[in-house]
Amino acid sequence: MSWKLTADLLVIAAYFAGVIGIGIYFSRRNRDTSDFALGGRSIPWWAVLASILAAEISAGTFFGAPGEGFRTRNFTYGQMMAGYLLARLVVSFVFIPAFYRHNVVSIYEFLENRFGPRTRRFASAVFLLTRSLASGSRLWVPTVLLLVIWNRLNPGNPLSNWEQFWFTGGALVLITLLTAAYTAIGGIKAVIWTDVLQIAVLFGALGFSLWYLLGHIPGGWEGAKTHLTGPLDLSLWSWHGELPEGTRWADLSLWQKTTNILTTEYTIWAAFLGSTFITLATHGTDQDMVQRMLTAKNKRQSAAATILSGIADIPVTAAVIGIGILLYVFYTHIQIDPNLPMAAGKPDSSQIFPYFVVDVMPGGLRGLVIAGVLATTMGSLGTALNSLATSYSRDFHFRWFKTPESDERGRVRIIRIATVAFAVVLIGVGLLTAFVKATNPSLSIIPIILGSFGYTYGSLLGIFMVALFTKNRGSDFGNIIAMAAGFLVVGFLSDLHTDVVRIFAGSSFSSLKPDWIPTIKFPWRIMIGTIVTAAVALCFATKDSERLGTPDEI
Image 1 (spheres, rainbow, N blue to C red):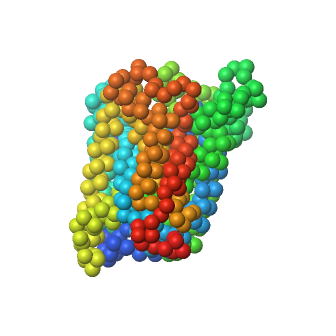
Image 2: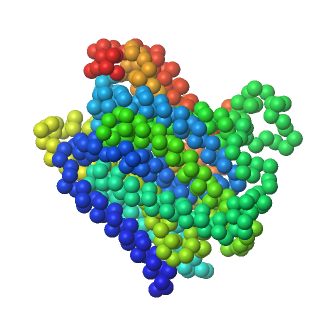
Image 3: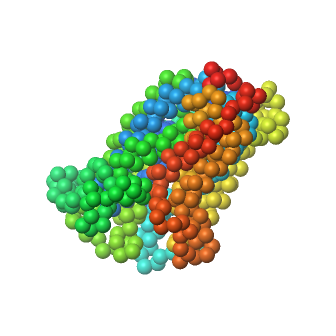
């Protein structure tokens, strides 16, 4: 075994030892469900901030954002930060105070106080299904790095589709079970404090990657800029999507301009509108994220952590995109490599950063980056497991099986069992995703599962908006109709029904949606779902008999 590989393994082993040690340390500090799910609301704001960042920077972001930088050679992906900051202000001054005022553990308890039990259970069920699909499917993302490592260590001996499935599946199961172990033992405290460790490892990995690339490009950043002379290279903003050659934006009709905006992912309109609604949904209606915020000592510290995490996102996003741009310069002008992973005749942007990590980085530091990838995966997975278990137990299990309020040990035991059970569910989703990816990558089930929250979270946000900004609109029955309407409209406009049919009928199946209706891109799904859901919910009046709380208490 070479010293480089030994150094990598030592770094990775030290990381795992730290994670397990934190879980064991907090295992005896969970006296009741509040301690297990919310850390007794005693977590310092800076640790909550680190945990929020760890949740946002998934393995998909770790690889995907550099890939976007490599592909586009500009920072337009980062303009989405504008909406992220605006939404955090609304979450901090509207959502969080309401959740603290009602002293909720599952945020869907708030919906029962406002409307009734059916709204709470339906919203919680939407979260449980969506989060299970999204978190489970993302488990295969870090295995891209493992496949690159295998291919570099075994040149000329690539894995077959079935070998890829077993290889990635084994790693997926191991990572999930390890994360479930420290999450079930230590609760949210273990999750948050391991997030602090993980974000430190992640920042170290990103910092070294930037330092190494800048040091190996003559002239550093200024030298890199001499190779980036395209019309859109290094641009920060984009007002509209790509236009046909010879077409001017000013010559388009209002409908053509609207269609162009709705069918383009990264524009200034998506930054200030689409991404605002995305963040309102992910940071205001998703138990996975909000549960971290509710561990702070009070609403002011929670708001501070939430807002500052948005500010911290700006340099982090700039760093990961910058890595991708520098990789483009490095591999196309400085160190031209004929062995780059290819896709459709071009360098595969999704694998370019993993390739660089494995092929170029020195031993030890390469282990640091691999540990960073594991950190992003385990950080987002840990809170997903804790929030899924908490939401299920609070919103369903404790109602179906009357666990006495006084039996706190029994309640904590139920949440721990649910944590392990959801780990099994996520493993099942992850293995299914890995199987589909390995055997038939052309099937569209992958983006459907990965983007699942875009189809459903608009429905959640619409109901929360009605609950927070009105006093007598929305009903326990009408909200179900409203959420279903929001999902159906978004599914239709995003052509979800066609994608689902193609999974079974083949990729040649034509779209079921008329050509004149634009197929909306991801940033717009939640906004449209929210508007439709809220509009339908406002048609129903709140019945006093349905509410547990008075309007003034909301």
